[in-house]
Length: 232
Image (tube, rainbow, N blue to C red):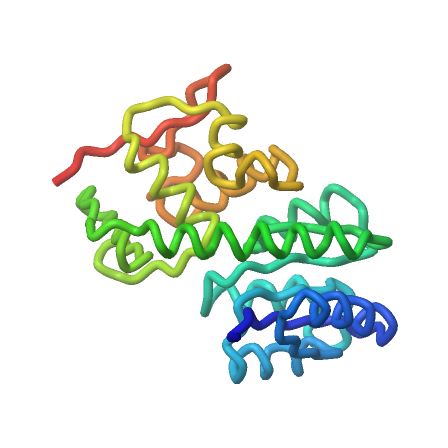
């Protein structure tokens, strides 16, 4: 039976062994890298379904590697790090990671998070509609999981695309951060609700002409966010 492929990019041998053992017990195919450069090479050659990424890596560090991968792919990325500071979590999520796990960690919890990310990714793939939403300079292809901005392809990480398409599909409706988190990340997600704010900011930086004065993803003070745009 074909199994999902997981790329583990972790420079500590014992931790890499522990993660790999648990993944293989759960019938995942495991690829391993021990530094950022090797991780990027294996990512490009193996086409994994999910990446577990340490931040403190030799060569290209985890932050830079996450940024490089996000320019190419919307694959789920789970950061695994001993760095517990909120600023590191916000930065990691801001660069496109889908989840952030701190060391020491529970292997069973890590497996649960992996399953949740893979399940969500598969559900989103299966549920895409044959539909293109046209807002003029911004076009969202729900079937192709693709966004065009002024005619140029805009490659978004999975969660950014899901958040944008959810808001655009429900244009004009105001959603609280809690509603957005539950709809995009799910009730069973282990993440922090503040990740909604991070993803909104990141989307605005990519699609708004002036991110400090957004016209598409608008803040409704004291309530939440809504998408404003006229369908063509």
